[in-house]
Image 1 (cartoon, rainbow, N blue to C red):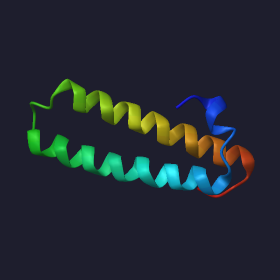
Image 2 (image 1 turned 60 degrees about the vertical axis):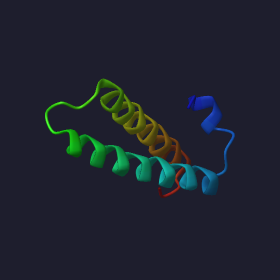
Image 3 (image 1 turned 30 degrees about the vertical axis):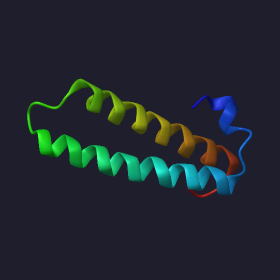
Image 4 (image 1 turned 90 degrees about the vertical axis):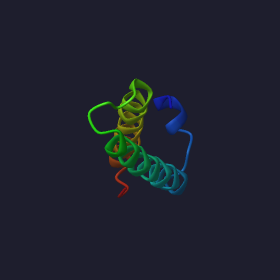
Length: 68
């Protein structure tokens, strides 16, 4: 999600979005564990993208002085 999009969301919407991304990350990590050493690239990429989104949302909330 683009940083300028995050600026237009209120704190509560950002927290809900963060909650969703964290749940998605937990699910992806479970999938990764099930594959062992042969994790498909799309799962690896989804994990990386989800972690990036989480960090962006946390940074936006921190910049606003709001707790994640």
